[in-house]
Amino acid sequence: MRHLLDVTDFSVEELYELIRTAEDIAQNKEKYCQSCKGKKLATLFFEPSTRTRLSFEAAMLELGGSVLGFSEASSSSATKGESIRDTVKVVSNYVDIIAMRHPIEGAAFAAVKAADVPVINAGDGGHCHPTQTLADLLTIHRECGSLTGLTIGLCGDLKYGRTVHSLINAMSRYAGNKFVLISPSELALPSYMKDFMKAERLEYVETTDMDRYMSQLDVLYMTRVQKERFDDEKEYMRVKDCYILDNKKLAGAKKSLRILHPLPRVNEIACEVDSDPRAAYFRQTLNGKLMRMALILKLLREKDMPYNARKSEVHKDLNCPNPKCVTKTERELEKEFIFSDGEYRCAYCDCYVKNR
Ligand code: CP
Image (cartoon, rainbow, N blue to C red; front, side, top):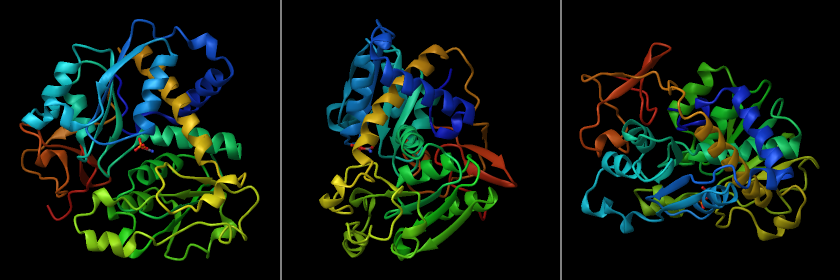
């Protein structure tokens, strides 16, 4: 059946279809209020969330369905050592669709392998966050009028920022987009993502200077430095306040610039920016709910279609080099890899297996 592990699971046409559905839902709320009557969504959140969990729950309720689940690992049997595999297998007996967030990279693909209902990746460690990207796509489409020909600045934590990785994947599929990667060197985009950008021949520059490209940007995607992903607190303290967007910094920016942020914000955008019409981050949260409604409808409608987005194969002799990969923690998970452009990469966390 169909699942959503990353935005690349959907074709460009399917993403436009989701945008069209979300726009229709926004205009005709009543038309959809019984669409999921009798259907249940499980929200399995092994990691904290405000927007993703609550917007999924609001989405299902507004579609006439119901929701059940947990909001922290400590209230689930994960604390007793239950695997992702067993949890998902069991929950598949209770619901029609699952949205899962987990701190371990590649956890979503591990869930897909066990599930008997569609699984939506609501964030798996520093890997991907595709439904945030759906919110981002609708926001860019609504605010900029197009998904093509844009100069997109991504600022802050590009290393651990899973929303950044998913957004680059998504925007790389639309013609003429350029990327400005703004981060301290410690939080630069991971090499597997840069390998991907080079392979796709994407135009990008890396800089530590937030001001340098400000006047060229159509979209500025700010991100939080994610304390919870650091192994070393001293390193976090060194970089945590590296970029703070305020009115002064915006002085030279285009009038048509749109500022996005997946939220939560800590202090990387000064509150004075909130009243600037270019600040789109609170509108983005509403768009997230609309796209999650469109997504639930699509996956339930297409649940009998085969899932073949990850063309992976089992390789017992290969190991994923990522220490945060789910294959390091989940019992009895077959090691699966995707072969493309002469390289193997882990089917769970997308880490390239170099030096094998
Ligand atoms: N953007 C986002 O994922 O927010 P939450 O962590 O609150 O769900």
